[in-house]
Length: 251
Ligand code: SAH
Image (cartoon, rainbow, N blue to C red; front, side, top):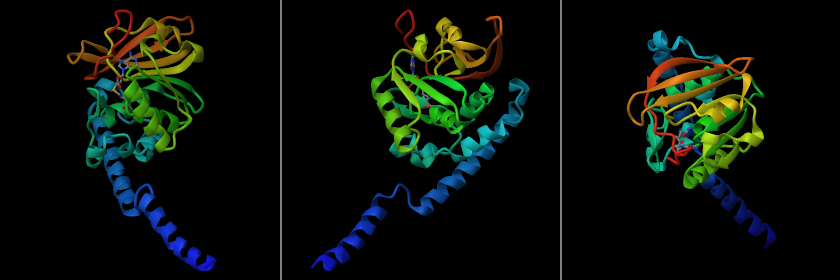
């Protein structure tokens, strides 16, 4: 009886494993191919925008991260087929997961070393945070919309990036208890560079932030904090991001 039960259970178990296995091998290969294509498109776009960005080739480690992190796990179920197109996609609540080229460029501009402490403002889907974590950064990320914070947390956990530290709060004010940071990345457009974020950047640290009018002209800025605490700001590229809400005016 026992042997019989075992004989019955083993194929059942195998079938259940197959059913619940994350992604079948063929789909995994298709995703890997799609990611390789996406990485080629990012490289082409980097070359095309080099005059503005000064970065004709992005850091090889950043490109490797783009080639490995499963973006399809961070998009909405209906958009999985579009996950590796080089464009932004909706993630609900009027927000978007950024265009892969922009994710790669912003990450490149942070010039991260493994072990750097990084703060992201705007967790959203969790994809950018996963890229930072893949690069070995001690990643902290803040999201203001509770439902998205929860979604981001789930996406990161499901994709195996449980080490990312997450907080639901207004990122304008940063994360004072975890400061100072080697790098800060803001993934929503602010009207100005938030002073609390400059304060929480280490001397020698770098911040990448889109600044400008909501949905109109915005520029990606690289803000570098000098040893004496002063900042040098460089305009990198015109961009289009969803607005950073919160801050002193409360939105
Ligand atoms: N980095 C995200 C992109 C999300 S879009 C990703 O990889 O998917 C920008 C996100 O910033 C949105 O989720 C939005 O809710 C969030 N956001 C806007 N203002 C914010 C604020 N003051 N503090 C924290 N998050 C904010």
